[in-house]
Amino acid sequence: MNNIICIDIGGTAIKYGVINTEGDVQCTRETPTEAKKGAAALTEKLRHITRELLAECPDAGGIAISTAGVVNSDEASILHATDAIPGWKGTSLRNELAEFSLPVEAENDVNCAGLAEYISGNAQGAKSALVMTIGTGIGGCYIEEGRLLNGHTYLPVDGTAFQDLAATSVLSATVAAVKGGTPEEWTGRRIFEAAAAGDTECREAIDTMCEILGKGIAALCFVLNPEVVVLGGGIMAQEAVLRSPIETAFARHSIPLVADATRIEFASHQNAAGMKGALVNFLNRHPELA
Image (cartoon, rainbow, N blue to C red; front, side, top):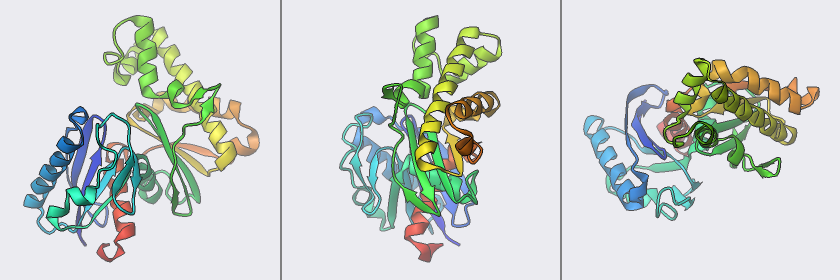
C-alpha cells in the first residue's frame, strides 16, 4: 500500500492531503488559492504544499492533482483556462514539480469528481453516469463502463448557456438584484438560510434554479441516456431542499421512458471529491503503485 499526495485546486481554496492507495485519507488540509496572483504564485504554492506533505510523509509515491481548466492528462499540463488564474494556460505541472522526482498526474476537477463518484460514490455500480458540479459555473463529465469521456455541460437552455441560468453564481446575483447588496454578500448558504426562515424571494430564486437545472438535466439525458445523474458542488449539500424540485422539473421536461430509467443522486464525497478523483486518475496511470 502506497501513500499519494493529492491536491485539489479550486478557484477559492486548495484542498490537499495524503490518501493511501486503498482510498483512506491520512490527512487533509486547506489553504486559499489566491488565484488572482497568477500561475507563478500558484505553482510556488503547490511546491510549498508538496514540501510540507513530504516532510510528514517522506515515502509518498506520487503527486495527484485535480484542477480547473482543460487538462492534457497525458502530459499533466493545462491546455486552456480562463483568466480566473492568470497565466494558468500552458502550465506544465510535471515540469513545475520536477524537483521532487515523483510521478505527477493531473486531470480536470469535474472529471475527478466524476471518477470519485463512479469508483466509490453514488455512481458506483452504474453502467453509465453523468456527473455534474454546480458552482460558479456548471461542469460535467460522462462515464460509461469505467471510461471517462471529457466534456462540459455548456448546452443552450431557452437560448442561453446552461451555466448562465442555473449556476450558484447566478442564484447569488439574482437574489442580490432583488434584495439589494452584492452577490458576494448573498452566498448560497445565506440564501438557503433565509429561505428556510420564510423569505419568499429567496425561496422563489431557489425554485427557479431547480426548474432550469431539471430542464438542462433532461436535455442531457435525452442525448446521453445515463443510468444515474450525480449532482455535486457545494450547494448540492442542500439535498433536503433541492431533491424534490429538481426531480419534479426533470420529470416534467423529460418523457417517462427517460425519466423512469434515470435516477438522480447527490454527490457523496462532497469536498473530498477532487482529491479522491485525482487519486483514481493517478492510479489508472500507475497501476504498479496500487
